[in-house]
Structure formats: structure tokens, C-alpha cells
Image (cartoon, rainbow, N blue to C red):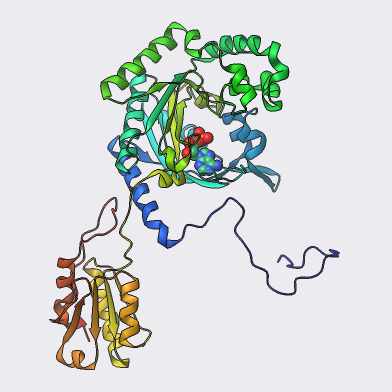
Length: 457
Ligand code: AMP
């Protein structure tokens, strides 16, 4: 067991009073008051992706460090300075900073390319990057994302971008801005990098320290530097799309044509490059809700990574993917969800009523209704106060007299009305008056029938 006073020989004063233990900086709790919006956006994402023929994949949070070094690229911010890496029993491990590398690893490891020509996977879950925390930027954050393996055509790219825009609109981000670019294939990028370096080398001294270093390691990243000196230096940089090979150009033209046909507006941003090394050809970003997020914040980033599967030891399989920060989507989204916790609070009065209330509560839940039985044995006033704070539409009063008569007192807290109901009828009665089910579940289960009246002892 770890000694709370520190390692033996530690001269600092021993722990005397318990100190507050706080969450790791940049890693946040999501409390139940906020979770309803998370569930809604997650459910909307699952529905949107399943509509597009994607299925969920779940890969581990912990992966071998070399996976990310190989897939993301050594000279990237993520690999250079942001990964949570450690060695456990001589094995170098990293908390996943993004989802694509793990998905591509799983795709290769399970030989999925042998089972189907096109694979469409989506995922959602936490990612870890040691970045400087700010609004919309955390060290543990959640991404929703998707990967499509096996389809090299621009139709796949356009469909993904269009599906994403539809999803964003659905969750209350009304006018997302799509930015696209093509960085071509490896040959195009090599030619472009040469031209860029030639242009920047004479003004190297004016560049930020990071960009001076990148000039030899990863010059494309200088294009998306936020540093004013770098921005000035690249202002007249040639457009990457002017360097495309004929094949790259056909892909690029196809993408724009398909987006036009789908009615998805976009802006071509010739300086759009992305932080991870694995991209080629199509790149895209989606921004929006600038009033809430600020101008710099990207909601979604994605692109084609045709070389990665082979890079990880698999066959040559083209692929495209995207990831969106869930926290950013939630900041941007106008979506509201009902804040009520239950529909019914059952308030037993007196010792004898508690057990009957527990049974009644079970039967109300079996009818698909959310129900809290307050078995604290407090006053009726305190129980009604709690019903209000839980946002319950109904309170059910169950005292000795009601027990003897086989009824309950049903209070409609919205209509401020009250009626007597046979206890056995209560589950069906309430189920008919509240919307069941409440959560937009992927596959709602039909409510089980209420147990027979004889159960209600
Ligand atoms: P990336 O994987 O860097 O392409 O990022 C894709 C999306 O994930 C971004 O557009 C953000 O919405 C989100 N994202 C990336 N890094 C963070 C972070 N540190 N905190 C919150 N969201 C992030």
C-alpha cells in the first residue's frame, strides 16, 4: 500500500489533517445535472452514424506507445509534447490521445479487410492530451468520431461531411462552417514542402522558434501556426491545390462536385493543414457557434489517411475519418433537455406504508415510469418539497387510511389537483399520463406489465 506520508526517508512533515483531493487539472467531472445533455448528444450521434451504416467500435484507452508514434508521426505536437506515456513492466504505454490510430490497429489486428470490402466504424469516449487547459480545451476530453476503411473515392468523403453537418444541425448548431482542402498524396506533399521551404528559408529568422524548428521537421504545420510572424510569412504561400497530381486533382474536383450535389456549403481553405501527420488528400474542419466558442475553436477535424493501415502492418487500404470534441459540441449546441429526475415520488406516511410503497414503486417502474420512493419516514411536507426538487409531476401519498382502503392519494403537482386511485391501477394510470420512455434510447424496451394487484401487500 502507498504510504500517505510519502516514501521512507521523506523529510517533509507527515500528513496530519486530511487535505482536499482535487481532480487532475484539465480533467473534469460531469455531474448528473449536466449529464442529460451529454446523453442526448451521444444518442443523436449514434443515431446519425447508424443511419449512415456505421457501427460502434470500442478500443482500449491504453495502447502501446509505438502505435501513436508510428501512426500520428514523431514531429507532431501530440507525440512530441502532449501524450500521457509511461512504462509498466517494461512495456511503453500511452493513454490514447485520439481514436484513429487505435481503430486502425484493431482493423489490421482483426483482419477486418478480409471480411468486408468497406468498413464503417464510429466510436465515442475519452481521449487524453497534456495540453494547456482553456475553455473547450482539456487534458481529458471526449471525442465522437468515425472511420471509413476501404473506399478511396471522394463520394465517401462528401457523404461523411454531409452526414456530419446534418448531425450538427440536429443537435442545435444551426450553421456549421465547413472548410476543406486537399493536401494531395505523398508526391504532391513532397513537392509542396520543397516549395514552401524554399520560400520560407530566406525569412527563417522572422519565424517563431517553433516554426524555425518545423522548417526542417514538419514545414506544413507552419501554415496553421497562430503566431503573427508566421502568419505574415506564409500569407503569400502557394496553394497546396496548385501542386496536385492529376489523380489528386480528380479526387479534389470530385469532392467539391459531390458536396455541391448534396447541398453542403463549404469554403476552400488552402492553408488548412492538420496537427496529425497521417493525413493525405481530403482535409476538413468544421467550425461554428463562434459567439460561444471563440473564432479559433474547431468543432470537428477530419481527413483522409490512405497510408496508415499499411503503415501499421496491414494491406494498402484507403481510409477517411473525423473526430469532434464532445465538450465543444455541448458548449456550441442549443439543445436543452428536461431537467426532471423522476416522474413520480411515492411518499409513504408511517411505518406500515413503507413496504407497500416499495412494492408500488417497483410496479410503477415496471410500467416504464421513473419513480423515487422516499423511505426516509419524514413529514409529508418534506416529501412534497423533495418531489418538487426532483421535478416530479406526481406525488403519491400512501398512509394507513389509504392502505386499509386499497387506494392512494395521487397529487398532480403541475395541475395542482388531487384524486384517489385504486392502488393496483396506479402503474397503468401514471404510465398513460407521462411520456414513456424518457431517454432517447437507441432501442427502447417495451414496458413490462405491472404485477397483479395481489402483489401489493
Ligand atoms: P484532432 O484529433 O486534434 O483532430 O481534434 C478533433 C477535435 O477534437 C477538435 O476539433 C476538438 O473539437 C476536439 N479536441 C481536440 N483536442 C481537444 C482538447 N484538448 N480538449 C477538448 N477538445 C479537443
